[in-house]
Image 1 (tube, one colour):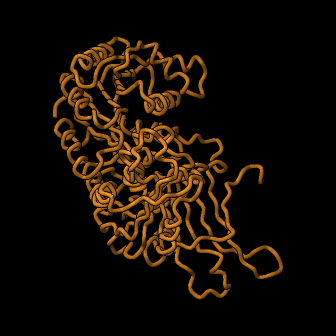
Image 2 (cartoon, one colour):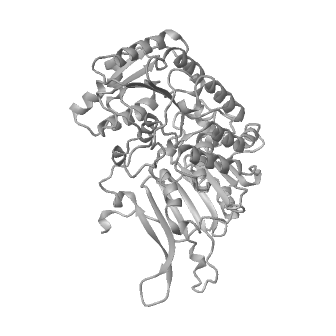
Image 3 (cartoon, one colour):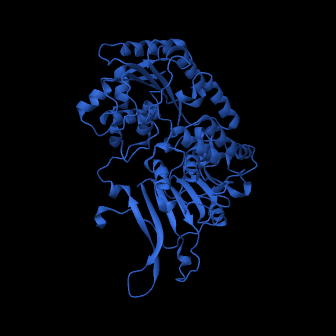
Length: 517
């Protein structure tokens, strides 16, 4: 396609290190010239709470600079440049007034509709004027469009971008488009959306963002699995009994019930965020760190997942969910789900992967819990204390720890559960862990698609969950009631027990603090 073909950089497959500052020495490309970042939906919550703060953090760290970047907000709201700046000012933290002012001066606002060419022609005119300004560095003309919008307007917006706003064919450079989830509601709608966008842009120009892939601990999974010798012989069905990937929130829909009811917890969390984590836990070692090689392996493991068995699914809906006037009284939409995935391949045959997510629960956390099989020949008679587990805490209090059995200090030969612990807040005290959105926007600027969802990967994900979702929508599976502030339906714990999960009684991991030392 004309107007913005992507050129991959020689180092685009590198895995990011512990902070974005370390990446400054890794030159993903030698691109120069004007970078225009257009945030569509600039007046919305996502833009002001996530997108603009991520851009500000990149600016603070020197990854985008005033000599090369211009930021444009686009939305239907009637607003001035200064109006947008004031709207987002309160969400930009951790900088001096002078530095904040420098960033805000990079932002301009264009008002227009999402399905009419006039607004986009004005956007293109404004963008082009900045690209040809004498203040800009000569070189490539790069345009990045961030769609902080509902998916229903993606086709019309992308048509307008394609018709009016592509990098001019007379310039070298590229045009790239970031689209937010949800990518459809089932396989057919996702394929329809993919086809519509595919008619307008090459796959190399589309960046389907799942912010979980930008989280520090998620990005660490490949390093942990394939750079540490002792994990290699253990990471299989001979040693691992079960894997749990858990997302818990301690609040409900909080006024978003009408929107949430269209999707439910499986579409909102499990089919995308948790499934992406599952891929990185279960995939085979890629040929290299090339984005395509990594995404190839993710597709392979998704295609190896067997059909979901209804007997291995528990759905829940918290009491009070339907008190929201925007939620239908007869709603069967789950606010909690526990779903077992089984991978039909040599490494994982017989190992259940339990993907669990819920709202209005007793705690807030996201973690991966890999439980190993019992040690044979239990001469210490400590089996009842619990199994070895490798736990990766994604949020909050990022950490990874190995639960193991040790001798209890004292004169008696007694055992107890303890841990080998890497807590990021203690080990990396002087390192700022970047937010997921700033990392992924930087990846897009550099043309690195490793942490974005490819079209065939999206299709394979929907093929797994669409039959289950259609059965839920048709009422063939019912959501069980549960009380807010609990663990969810008791049946979910029973399902985990059936899958072989053994809880550790009397042991609670507590994040270490400097006060302990």
